[in-house]
Amino acid sequence: MIEFTRRAALASVTALGIAAMGAPVVADGHKVTFTLATSGSETDQRSVAMAEVFAPMVAEFADYQPGYNGTLFAQGTELEAISRGNLTMSIASAQELAQFFPEFSIFATGYVHQDAAHQVRVFNDPLMDPFKKTVEDELGVKLLSVMYLGRRHVNLRQPRSEVDVQTPADLAGVNIRMPGTDAWQFLGKALGASPTPMAFTEVYTALSTGAVDGQDNPLPTVVDAKFYEVTKQIALTSHLVDLNYIAFSKETWDSLEPDQQLVVQRAADAAAAYGRLKQLDKENSLADFIRSQGVEIYTPDLEAFRTHVQAQYVGTEASEAWPEGVLERINALGN
Ligand code: KDO
Image (tube, rainbow, N blue to C red; front, side, top):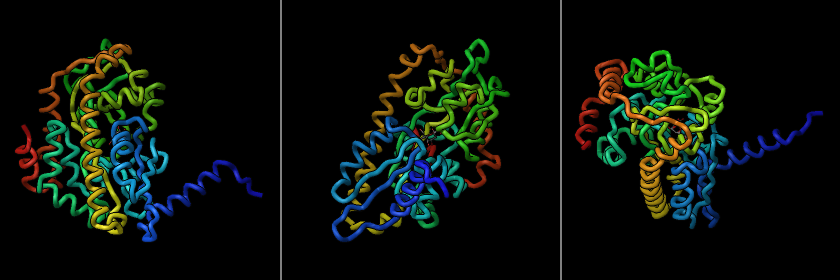
């Protein structure tokens, strides 16, 4: 007899739940379920913004059900899940989109976005229309709004006395965990390091055991994931002003009434704006706390990093998929 373990039971419940998620809004007055999958934690500002701002705004007709820490879908598989009708929403990266549509690598390139406001201007500019249309037409995913994750920095296990990161040359041979897609790995190499692909949920353990020498993420993530417990230094490289898109199932969108679509769009914009302010605030205030935990924080030679990283993209194979003129238009929206 096959033993019916708790694990198997949970798996079958999850499978049933997932099968129901893609179903369109029911017309009999019942609420539709908006399931969101993220590898972020419940206390990540983007998760908080979705739970505290998005969910109440859509509550009249939708029941918001988030799954944190990659529990519903593994990092990087969420877009496909939406596309297949198994998930309603995710907090998607440009790097994940670049797996389907290589032109998205332009938004995953080091030192392209200048700050949070620049990201918003780029996302709302007509230059984004063909990108959004492709994702909608070919993947069945609507990109509703842009969320701010923050400035990514190099965060190492070793103290500065062992690896003093001033220029990309100082990262030679340093094994840095980067998320597991080509665009992320390319960025790790462009920084001068030896990148290792790994899901976000594995990073704390990998740092604590020494399976990797370091990782890159913004300061709020270093605190939220407690990476300061298992690392010794942060070089403020600011190599990527990182963003995520609020990705939404087109199938579910099309099943909503026009006034409900308006509410969903407004709720996504409001959550993104709220999360952005919170994240910026954290980014500006967390360095002292991280230092108090014994992690050294310093600014390397930013010009050396910017020049080196940009040279890896512009005029190379890495930028072949970028539509003509888009980089110039992004730059023109900068400060
Ligand atoms: C990460 O894996 O390092 C990353 O920061 C990449 C982001 O795109 C985003 O997915 C994030 O993880 C997760 O939401 C966890 O914070």
